[in-house]
Length: 219
Image (cartoon, rainbow, N blue to C red; front, side):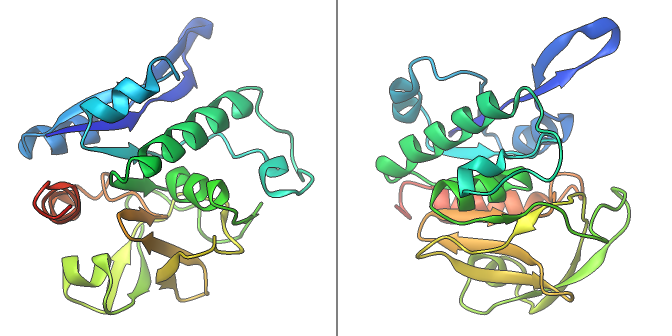
């Protein structure tokens, strides 16, 4: 199996600009015998959708430009935001157009929600914790997440300062934190979570996505 995965922009030592994915993704999908196909540009996107069985839209420290959901920014917008937004929205639409699975993580859930007409809270309190800290989340029955974990409550990490405000049309909220923040949404073959299962080494989550959503038998 081959899954496309969005690379992220970062400015490193001595001003070096790089596109990268976190090592946790490499380690997890290596164990699952899945080849990751990194995407950092829109070159030959149609070919990418033919080659790959699904798409993973990962997190980023760079916020989505609020103009994409018709709001004025309350903070300075990163100079790479427009490029990253364009990449995310274009590739999400491309994979959705050919009915292939999409998984969103952190910024990924926000990009998916905005791409399909939803909006975001530009800043929220108490959700930018460390990788090790956890908080409770409630899962809805009859959902990908409930079927994966077979529980209505679990603990997740939290490394974000933005979150879904208005949920995109046709998407179902399948996870919420105790303070009401949307932590998971889904719509057919699109699954998205606000937390980082890769930092929790949650192989079960990714394995379930691969076997139940991405497998050709399921589709």
